Amino acid sequence: MRRAKGVLATIGVLVLLAWRGSARAEAPTTQLSVLYGLRWNTGELRERYAFSYYVIGVEAAYFPRILGQNNVGLSWSIRRNAFDSSSPTNVESELILLDMGLDLRARVPLILGPPQVVAYLEGGPLIVRTDIPIPPSSARSYLGFGVGAGIEYVLAGRFLATLGGRFGALGDPSGLMVFLSLGLAAR
Image (cartoon, rainbow, N blue to C red; front, top):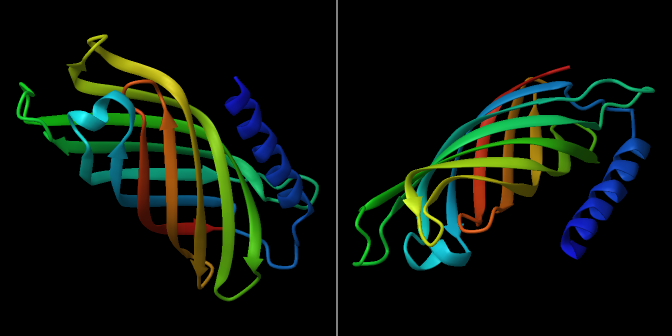
């Protein structure tokens, strides 16, 4: 519970900083990107399926214009993670995770233009589904909380490159992901 309060307090501070952010170079209102990344499992899965070299997905974000600012909004993402077995005792040689998140995202402009550079922090609920039951609970569906941070580069006002990281706290399938996404942005 203490960790959740700390995450919420951090998000609150970033939201306030983003709200006070400069309106001189307005960040994009909508974003659509594809992503590729790597993921390291933590917790129980670390012993059985430690590393995913193959995370692919899509991400969309919307930042409504409120009181002249558009630095706070929502992002949605869905990702497919493939893990090779890291233990000879595993029955299955591969584990597939499908995760989907809906996050509150706050942005702070770092460089106002061109190219525009924006830092972000996000957090929200995360749903994960696995293709095989995960011991010890033998569950396949998990609900938890995810947090992330990254740097967005907006080039020519239309193209978006993001380098980010994300941690999902779900119990057994918890993990840390690092990704690069490329996409389009619109004002």
